[in-house]
Every structure is written in C-alpha cells, then in structure tokens.
Length: 524
Image 1 (spheres, rainbow, N blue to C red):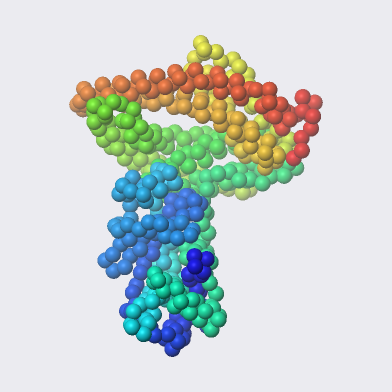
Image 2: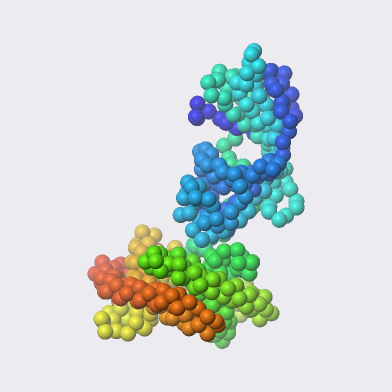
C-alpha cells in the first residue's frame, strides 16, 4: 500500500468543483465546511534544508499554528507553536536535534507562501462509519512580502482510515480509471516556486566555473570577478538587516577572493585600474571587520564557556552581554558605511569595468587561461614549499601566518580554475591544501582570539566596573587558547610533511609545472 499514489492533480477538466460533483454521485460522502490554510515554507538563505531533501513549514488554520518537519517520503515531526528564527530557539526535542547539524548558525527565512482552500470529504459505509477521508485542495502561491499571487494546480489527497483497505482501492480505481486523473509526484514547494519564476538553491557561495584552457585569460578573470560581485551584492540586504551572521561572512569571503584574484591573476587588467579596485575592496574588508569579529566571538561563546570548569562558567555572563552590545554598535557603524555613496560608487564602477574593460595595457589579457593559471599556481606552490620548509620549532608565529596567506592564495587559484584540470587529480590537490590550512587557520585564530580577549578585558574595565571573577575567567580562557595553540604548532610539522610528500610534489608538478621544468605533459 505504501507505493500506491496518495495525491492526484486537479487541473483543467479535473477542477475541484467537477471532481467534487463526480465523487458525490458515485460515493456516499459527507462534505465538511471549507477551511483556509496558509502554508509558509522556511529554509536558510542558501537552502540547506532543501539540499538535504527535507522541508520545514508553518501551517496556520484559524488560531492553530503548527510547525511541520518532513522528508521526501513522509511527514516526520509536527509541533505546535510559532516559527523560531534559529535552531537554538526550538524547544528541546527531535526536531531541534535534526535541524541543528543542517542549519548551524543560519536563520530560517520564509521562502514561499501557499494559501490553500481545503474541503474535507468523509466516505461513509452503510453504518455511517467513516472508511476513507479525502482532502480537495486549491492553491495559490506568492513570494513572501509580495502581494501578487499565482494560481497553482490543486490536489486531491487520500487519507486512509486504518482497517479499511477496500474503500481506498475503490477510490483509487475511480480516480484513475473513471476520472483518468494523474498521480502527483512533485512537491508543492517546487510547483509554487516554478509558478512564480523562482528556483530552489538560487544562491550558493561555492565556486563553479567551466573554463576551457584556451579561453582568453581576461575573459575567465571577468567571469570570476562578476560571480564574486554578484555574491557581494546578493548578501548585502541580509548583512544590513543582520538576519544571520553568514550574510556578512559570505560577503567578506567574496571580497577577500576578489582582492586575491586581483593580485594573483596577473596581467589581465590594466595595472592602474587594478590598484584602484584593490584599494577599494581593502576598505570594504576594513569596515566590515569589527562586526565580523563580534559575530565570531558570539558564535564561539558557548564553546568558550564550556571550556571552563562548571563553577566558573557563570562568570562569563558579563562578557557575553558586552559582546552583544558592541556587536550592535559595530553593526550600526558598518551599515552606515555600506549605505554610503562611496561604497555604492565602488560597486557600480567595478561592475561597469568588468562588463566593459578598457582595451590595451594588459599583457596577459589574450593569453590562454590554462597557461596563465598553471604558471601562477606553480609559482605560488613553490612559495608555499619554500616558506613551509623554512619553518622550525624556533620560528616566530608570524612565519606560520605568512604561510597561511600563501596557502589561501594557492587554494583560491586552484578553486577558480579547477575545471581546466582532471577532476580527480585537482580534487586531491585541494584536499591536501585544506588539511594544511586547517592547522594553520586554527593556529592563527587561537592567537588572534587570545590577543582579542585580553584587549576586550581592558576595554571592559575602561568602560565601567567589571566583576573581578569575570576578568579571572577571561584569563583562564586566554591560557586555554594559548595552550591549544601550542598543540597546533606541534601538529604543524606532521601536517606540512604530509603536504610536502613525494606523492603530492609529483602531483603538483604534473598538473602545473611549465613544460621543461619537470612536467611530462598535462591533459586538460
């Protein structure tokens, strides 16, 4: 029975009124009063639930409010209440546990609103007992915050009653043979999105380019920069509204990648313009940095608190309140700058430049991107190897920080141009870099956090009275962070030794080394 159709499409000749009349003439039905149901589908901005093949919606019937969490096969969980914004706002239970690893820190946002007119039918036997229920539903959908609604195909849903298989079979036979109705295989959300001209997963921060190695280098660079500019602009509204921390994070990543591409994809644009835009996007990084810092410390606050012994955890409460206040003030200052004519002019000029770049003055503009990319990647790879091999136990932490920056440049370049190279081999190089970068990133982050916590302690003391126990607890945090940093420093040498293995050296040489420098040839 589980494989039998549950829903049938209502459209054209099978409009609701006609089907209702046909059913009423063929079966003994009790028709309930029509109800209006509003279904609001929620997901993160980057569609994390949808990509996990799951749906979450709020269902409103009169004064009733239900949250429904479902997978592709069947409804899983249903609880009453209003719509939480973050996963930590959900009540303890299975729904929260299922959502947490998918959503992480992302906010739930309304993605589609579907208004449904529902007429419930009860099929009765000779003793007036209900042996089958049906729901005839007519829909209209709209995007949240937009008034224009679009009519959708309706549905008739079968709701079996336990112990009454024969009436269900009779109804299925009538719908398929007499009315020639088609089962519905798609989801209501997909149909509604299509009807209003949207598609799911219409935003992702991932880089997906398809370059041919003979493409002119400037053309490829423009495609990269236009994608990154789209990411900046797409995340602006969510950043200004502070919907969740990932809007600002993705905006800053796009800005950082833009600066890296301007620096590392050399000779494809005139040098004077490159310098102007590098300076402009460096300013964006600076004005968004303080807010992101506060976001990071607030996101990590529970981990900070849990790293202390239980008797000291409550002492960090003043730190959390301090971070919340300063995040709000830093965010206000950041929004002022993002709303400024200077910022708007920067984005407008940058898009204009990319869409109509000036001719001349760029020596590598017309060179094949396969050649430009391989030469640059190989050069940065050699720099990574030189910097890594020079690091000893006595090296200053700045040496690891410089190596991290070089590794990030290398990773960005390979991710930009991965479509030029064999997928399996290029994936292996990215994996090798990520393993090393995880260590270097943790080492740098721990040092920065320890330094920042000391700075915050002084700032809290300067701004007013702060409990001594809070300063002591923050001191414990700093000690713990520095202890962990020492451990990552010990682990670094093993990580780099793995990265610098003979196998990886051969892989990078085969893929990127210029002809005549150890490379036997490369298929692209």
